[in-house]
Length: 168
Image 1 (tube, rainbow, N blue to C red):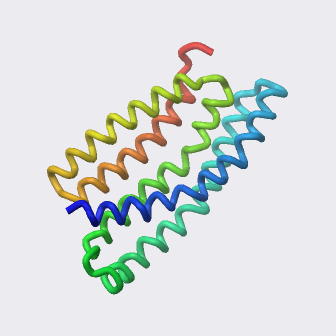
Image 2: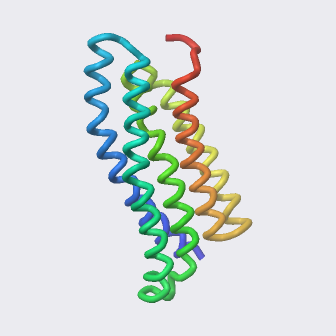
Image 3: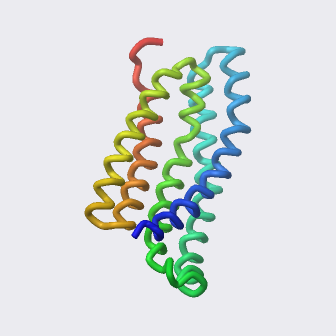
């Protein structure tokens, strides 16, 4: 059933808290820097720094959560024992996304909100398709794998959207 994925989703969503806090701390610095000099390279450096910091914080926590869940969930919530693999997959997806969240800030600061919106819509549609397909093929593990791929893909799309030079 969906219960193992539901638990994995709740645990995985908690993984996004720290990268979001880092993003909220970096965004004002990006906005001030861009407002002062309009230097997109400097903003990209801040986005990469934010990504490295988010990865440095998220990866060990995600690894700890995944390892702990492997022991704690079957022991304390045996009905959710099937959530262990989905938890690990979703945590991995959130870690992948954390490394790219600064590029969303980059798009906002440099006036590319429409591009940011397009990336979000593409990720939403692709994610829904991947998770529905995953559910049909492999249940909770398929849903979690679809979610992990979506999160990582969303991050990569954010990075690509900063590099595409359509119009300033």
